[in-house]
Length: 181
Image (cartoon, rainbow, N blue to C red; front, side):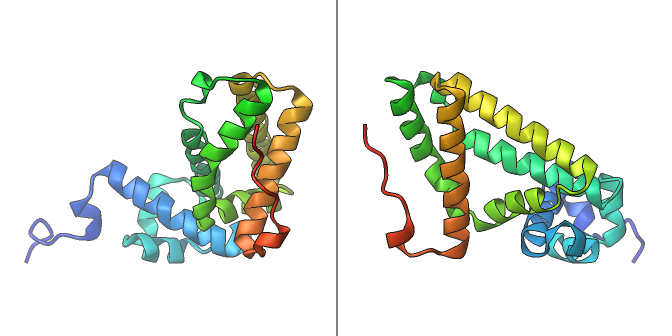
């Protein structure tokens, strides 16, 4: 059979689908192993592609890791969609935003990959990406809710705690009760 008659997994998917599959596989690999210990061979295997194809999509492992960090932030932003239409005081809007975040807590790879970005922030390029993403997220929450910088910092701190609590499967007794306004 000639090459044109055989089909690899790379042939059956569009470039966008392959990129998405690689990002999903990388998200899981980075979540599990962190930036430094993750292996592109494992990512390729998870995505069902050849390892060299990863480098056709991303110039190096760091750019793939940064794309995963961007993906994590995009999914968190998506959870907050429509928040500009929230009614009430800034405190009430923060509570409503927190409720919109709850489905994110059911995605452990997403949460762990986000935390791996913080852990790898000793690398200047990763730190710059994660820092810029954090600033953009804090600014967006402030714009959506009208909350003060202090209120947004408290909200973000609570969110990061909940991320860790869900990853560690902390008992309910150690979790804060939902705020009601």
